[in-house]
Image (tube, each protein chain N blue to C red):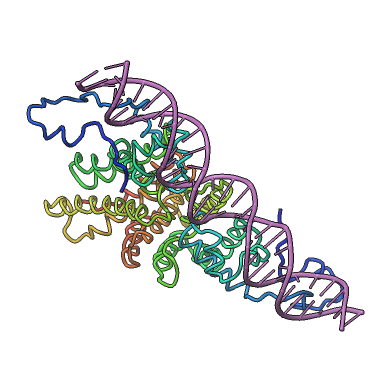
Length: 220
Length: 220
DNA sequence: ACATTTCTCTAGCGGTCGCTACAAAAATGA
DNA sequence: TCATTTTTGTAGCGACCGCTAGAGAAATGT
């Protein structure tokens, strides 16, 4: 329950009649002195590197370069900021998995591409190593936060499983394979690779690891 | 630097001349009112479940059922207690990996056994799920603690690698395989399985996952 | 008996946590 | 100009953090 997190367009405006795509109809009071998007990106990087608990609000205000009241007014409390961070992280950095599943013609190719792209993403020096969803809320004393990321991890595995089952349905994979176990194996690989990246493994090392993992994927 | 952590036998006694294995020569002052070993076990379980940061000293004094001064007198500060917890965890719960590497006749059999036993251990309802070394110090604001567990994880992978290289040396494995990548793959599997266990996977699910991982291990 | 040693209990230290009240500042509408 | 609305900076709230001083309790040595 918080004062209200202001967004670009109030819900009332979007219901108005002839408002032909007015992007920002000049809000009344003092304008915000920072860019919400770039501040959010700084928050993403901070939570990504240090996790939910270990990133204090004063850490956030420092890296986002805004005062605490501005943070609370723009993003709500720490937990709702983190939820928005996780959502936006998925869009900006975590979409490669869904894209691989959607664009590749077989589950095998999709998982192979996922692992390959994970190797690159998790070791990209442009941002913290590994996956935020895997590491940012382990050992979290706020159970909802921990559970939220857990749900995302399990949803990713479920998505892989669905893709495998689709291949079984079309005959691209034999009907006797264990789709759930195969999906879990892929999920464990990705999570293990994320941990390895945090522990110092290079992109090449992760790629070699992924190749081993894909070597015995069921053939058609 | 702390007041000094009292152990069973003072270092001076062990240097004495004719002291023929005197186990506990009746210490001078008021005796301790709790059993150090069982208190340590409680601390292991607490850190295992919640991690280093999320387990507060007052959490510890509650589950160990001792006062704060007793804790500090018996174990030093929070960080040195955690170090002892990690050491003892390795002895009581993490020794299956070293045993598999030492007792099995091939690296392949050793890793297969490691994964099989990890599936059982990580889902044992008698204690928290997953591996303390993997999860208890992620996103830790005390860098030495995080680095300490990172070192243990990488040491485990190095041990697997050595075992693989030994098999290559004896001809049990072909000389052209990438021992480092194969070891990293095994390490990632174990870490991924630990994460899966935390996320609710059952022993059977982890075993199925491990079987997939071992299916394409290099043959002789 | 009594001094000595060691542990336990109560109480609380300084510091940081997430969060917010309040007033000054900067925009708009009249 | 001036009332209204919203954001900003300061300053600090109560709660918890890791940790410890100090006094009393329970053992041993003489």
